[in-house]
Image (cartoon, rainbow, N blue to C red; front, side):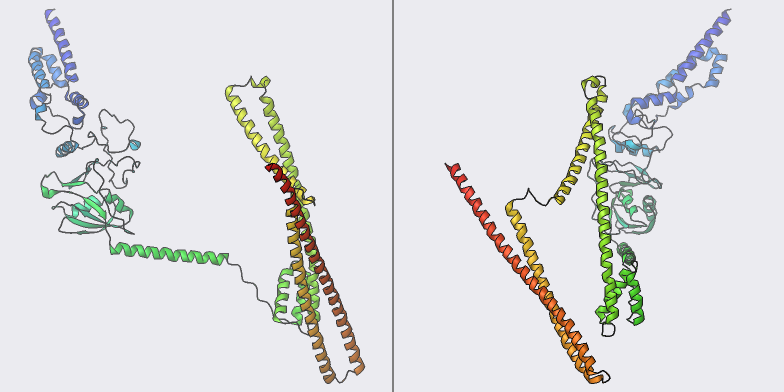
Amino acid sequence: MGSRKRGTQHRREAQGFRKMVLKRSPRTTESDDLRGDPALSHQSTPAPQDARNSIVDAGGLESITQCPQQLPQMMAAAADGLGSLAIDTTQLNMSVTDPTAWATAMNNLGMVPVGLPGQQLVSDSICVPGFDPGLNMMTGITPINPMIPGLGLVPPPPTEVAVVKEIIHCKSCTLFPQNPNLPPPSTRERPPGCKTVFVGGLPENATEEIIQEVFEQCGDITAIRKSKKNFCHIRFAEEFMVDKAIYLSGYRMRLGSSTDKKDSGRLHVDFAQARDDFYEWECKQRMRAREERHRRKLEEDRLRPPSPPPIMHYSEHEAALLAEKLKDDSKFSEAITVLLSWIERGEVNRRSANQFYSMVQSANSHVRRLMNEKATHEQEMEEAKENFKNALTGILTQFEQIVAVFNASTRQKAWDHFSKAQRKNIDIWRKHSEELRNAQSEQLMGIRREEEMEMSDDENCDSPTKKMRVDESALAAQAYALKEENDSLRWQLDAYRNEVELLKQEKEQLFRTEENLTKDQQVQFLQQTMQGMQQQLLTIQEELNNKKSELEQAKEEQSHTQALLKVLQEQKHQWRSPREHRAGG
């Protein structure tokens, strides 16, 4: 019984020791230390050798159960080992608040320098869900690098927030960003078509392979020209790759883990002016200009109206065909153009006068058709106006009914039963409907006002002086039109006189050349011609006399109007003077 009790007691002590060991394991201790000190959040303190040897695994626990007599010695050794896991702060010889020092130390230890205090690798907009702000890192997730090919640069933050850069690791070197509190590096004005960058501040031991390794993350490199004075020129394949390279300006470059002065340098990346870039840019501009000119030419050719068809020469056959076309409404425009060109060319002569007269007569017959078409279109327009007015009246009636419904809803009998939100909506709807109703009513009243102005002859709203001015301008225009018509009649009279003289000359020629005609026939023909010309002259003279009389009458009316205007002005002045005298008294 005593041995059984002792075995049970040893088993209980072994279970308690197992719980203590699991609770104070190195993994838990490391995470607790990391949570306690954010500056040490990315490094783990290795346990001493004797502590690792003193930690008992699951197999050792089974041996403890089998050999309870060794339990006190093992517990003492484990306690000593776990006690030695504490970090000696005297061994830390660096500033806790310096992120650059911590980054250098962590990089020398082969650890990823992420999550340092005061440094943010990516913006909050692209943070991965589940990020623990207490640990400042995520286990098993590689930090996002803006220079990784395929991902491109980190999207630029808002203008008021400074761009926060991170450490960039390459195979042969490491790039450390400059202090974010310092101003960004300056750059020159970007040349047109720039594909080449100037890179200064390179380490003395930097080779062309290292430079290509760093900058090939920005894009395809076509050429690298390295100088002996710690600078080089890099030419990329595309222009947008230069912007990625400018991102690296201000970084401090260190080769490997060396602290030698020749293995470090501060990069200065700027735009470079290259003849090849400018030549390619000029070629592209010329190509775009050629394409634009070609496009404009095609557009002009497409929009250019087609050239009119060639007009045929005059002949009796073509004149007969043209006379038929003039009678056809669908071909009238084309035919009248041909007729006009023939007359302007001078195709009208003694032999073709009758044909041209018949064609002009056919053209004149279309005037009645055009007037009928105009009347038809005016009637259609009036009908459309009437339909629009009727439709607008119906719409206005419905608006009145809707507004009446809203007004009835706002009365207290029905208004009290609506909720607050419903009352607000009804009030908004009522105001909107009233505004639309008023707009439609004003439009309808405007249409009716225009109709009344067109129908009425007297304008009651105009003053007498304005009426006199309108009448005076109308009389002046009428007098000018009569003068123009008088001049045209004079020109026609001169033309007829010239024709009479030509007829006399033709008469003499006919008398000499045509021997077959008798003198009596010639005299009779000439007498008929002279009678017709005399009748035309008499008609023209009568029209001229009528126009003169109308012109004199218009002048008399104008003088009478001016006299009446003076009388009205005197009456107005006389009416104002007693009124001013009364006001002064």
